[in-house]
Length: 309
Image (cartoon, rainbow, N blue to C red; front, side, top):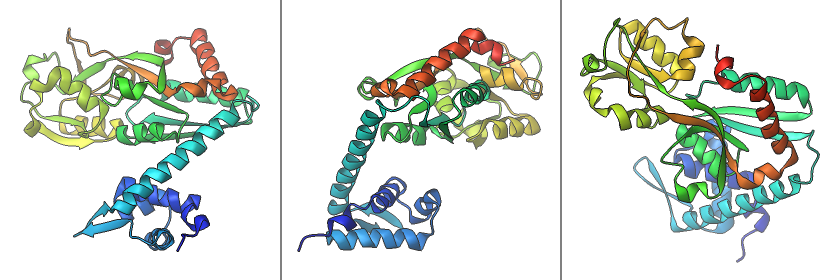
């Protein structure tokens, strides 16, 4: 008996299915989708009835994809990729003054200058709808890889930005970045921070990885007293508990008046770049091309570093 194609290829059902694949948790997936868990369960069961096979199995509380589920995932992602690519191609011929631009920003990226630019862009192009969300590192790369956002605002180098991955993407530099070490002590040195207590970022955070490349020896894992996904909470906790921590230079310059911790002078710089990351064909879409052009004009009027003051 053939499956009902309309039931199988329902965009909503496939979207819900892929979110459950990414989360492997009905609770988490339903929260992200903004629906109830029973509603999600109903959509998945509807899809399973349509194909005549279970798509998920369960061992204890852990979900896993069945063989049918793996095949459905492959098909669903191919379908969505095809739709996104087709929409991108069509949009290359649309008006540059309308439509929408979706932007994902890394949650530890200091947004002051980006926000200023978006305000200016919105005033100049009032009919272009801007959709802006903040994501952690894994979510952001997942979104750009699935073509669910037009621009990712993130840092490179990154292990996710390897040569194979970047063949389909291009980057446009936003700023040069570096790390600022912060201590509760005045006139301290890098060496004196060895084995002291720290507050840091979550394990998968970009800054955790980049910091380990240079300063792994000065923060033994057992000396990290707290981890945070957001910078404000990290700095507040470190200040209240007199812990060492670190932030980007951009964040430090913007929030220097609020920071009571002391900057630690070091001759070793950790240099990396903030960038717009986007698929190569995106630059052919008129409104996205305008977005990049307006960014250049914005920085030509006043450079990035000066806008941090």
